[in-house]
Length: 244
Image (tube, rainbow, N blue to C red; front, side, top):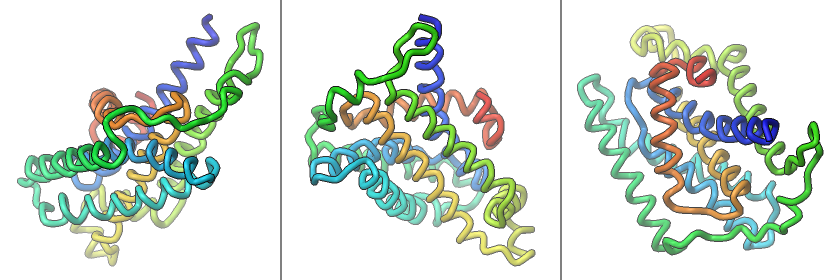
């Protein structure tokens, strides 16, 4: 029982971390909250539905999720944040992103209906597993946990060891100084939105795989809880977000 609860807790924590880190990245660079990230999280599940219904596999679902998340990231950045870069526009940008999120939910209801959509995965996906200390743990949970860990470790490597990561940290510390040093602040901002949205989208895909259905309101549920965890871990503090 303890092992099962531990695995479930780690899986849930990993899924929350993916959307939470996205919030933290954007806030760390712009000092503004992107409330639309929760709905991009939601779209990951529906990308799964689309890919599987067209005869694709989970690899196709991941690729579709990345493509859709990237497109939505650029739209949200342009509509809700590019014109509201000043420090006194925090509320305006947040409300604008919230409006975009509500539009995405309504769009999803119109396209897929408000009822949960089944992924149609075979029952073996959820019944097959491995015995750990006498407890049967479904492989799907271990795959989700592994994927979340790989994404978090990969992001940590990018932020700490790559030129992109150095640019993100520089813009986060001081956009003005970063611009004076030759860094394209606008491009870095777009890259941050894309990274955050891809993490959220894949998180939503993994949630859909875990439950077997895509639900339009999942972004709101996970998004609000992730915001609460981000507040505990530290607003804009990436390491704190992962630990929390």
